[in-house]
Image 1 (cartoon, rainbow, N blue to C red):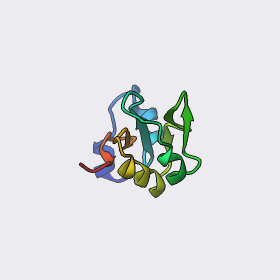
Image 2 (image 1 turned 90 degrees about the horizontal axis):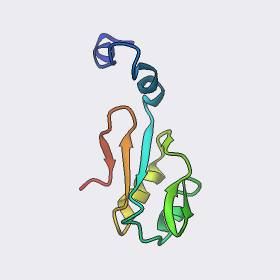
Image 3 (image 1 turned 90 degrees about the vertical axis):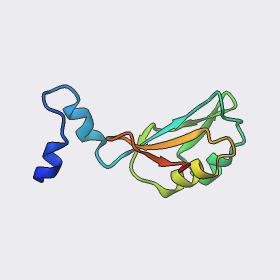
Image 4 (image 1 turned 180 degrees about the vertical axis):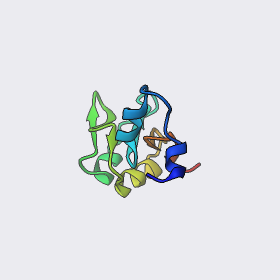
Length: 96
């Protein structure tokens, strides 16, 4: 680990393991109150999204990078899908 990376690691036991596990991963969030249930995301990010009660839900909330998930977030007509860097929380899509 470089010195730069070491400076950004949490100090102490709380959160250190969780952040290490999420390094380089993405978190998929769906606002189910906004989702219209069109299913566009299912076709765009095949295998990453599912419909549950007529609304989208990620199959797995934390995933490895997958451009299809970014495409799903960018093309969602309701902008109900947000993709974030799992370690930092930075929004990767949709870019507003």
